[in-house]
Length: 252
Image 1 (cartoon, rainbow, N blue to C red):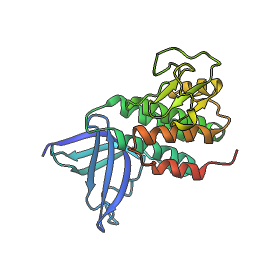
Image 2 (image 1 turned 135 degrees about the horizontal axis):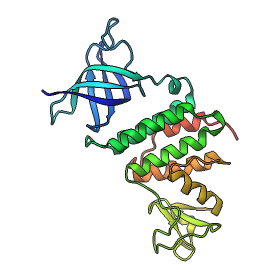
Image 3 (image 1 turned 60 degrees about the vertical axis):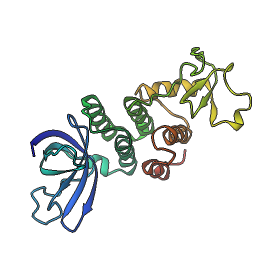
Image 4 (image 1 turned 90 degrees about the vertical axis):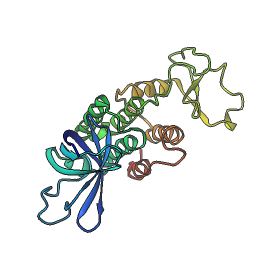
């Protein structure tokens, strides 16, 4: 089996037997990989207790193509995830990004996705508490776009007409974008969607572009995000990280 060294971020970590761990890694040049770290739970493990979610490092792997589970030989730490783990909302946001990558990414190399994820985790760790919702939403929407599921908030998905700056629009969850007043259903209450005011639609367009924005009612923005993700990435099942974030959300 060839031995490779690759930049990696730990997305998920759980015990396997009494002495080992299974990890899900996002790597810069080998996509998302599942690995086993044998002996990681032993008191004198060579991994030294660093194999936790959102830790970054250089992973040394024995790779055999066609095998679902590779072997982790070493992990040289470059950045811990302590800032994310010490705050529940930051941890929830980082967990959401990890869950999105695990759901939608593949074993194919995607250096841009890796760099975007790494940058997003750093920005979440450094975010001021009062700006955290806007930053989490921007990073989550931007990652969704990078994974190939960009929603349309500026042009009608049916006719292509640009929405005016102050124009309300119907957001169709199934279509993944807005419908102008001419294309929107007349019985909107019976369709999977909602009316979005012009100001909120402009905010959403910024968030999708990865630009943090002030959000007056974060719960409403998270609800829209959750419904979109459930239909387009999560195969109808809610993401656990979104449920966790909802629990952690402070009353506004």
